[in-house]
Structures are given as C-alpha cells and as structure tokens.
Length: 82
Image (cartoon, rainbow, N blue to C red; front, side, top):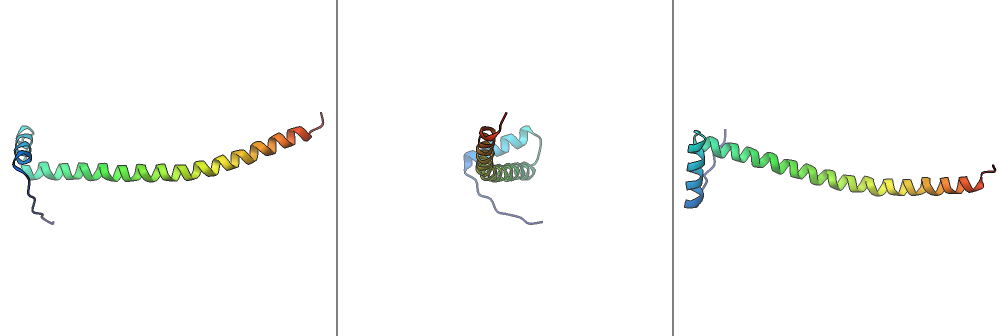
C-alpha cells in the first residue's frame, strides 16, 4: 500500500474533520472514499466523452449511408414501370 502527504488549508481541513466526525469515520477513510468517488466520476466522464466522440463518427457515416440509400430509392422509384 502506498501513502501520500496531503496539505490542506485550514478551512478545508475543518470541513473534513466535521464531515468525517458526522459520518463517524476516520479522516483517512473519509479521504480515501472521496478519492475513490472522484476517480470513478472522472473515469465515467472520460468514457462519456469517448462515447460522444465515437457516436459522432458513426453518426457522420450513418448520414452518408442514409443519403445514398435515399438517393438510390428515389432514383429506383422513378424508373419503375407500374
């Protein structure tokens, strides 16, 4: 297990102490949970950004395919003898 040195300004430290006390948990556990939650949220944001980017790539390709199909359908429909 690794350890880190963390410096906080007085106000944030007081908020940390109060929150940890309210939850009846040690400050180290509180900080560890906060880091885990933040890391999970950051990972989720990264995946969302990646999904948006890839969706836009697929969207552009889908629009081209839809256009080709639409043009083909319209042309074929005009050439049909009924």
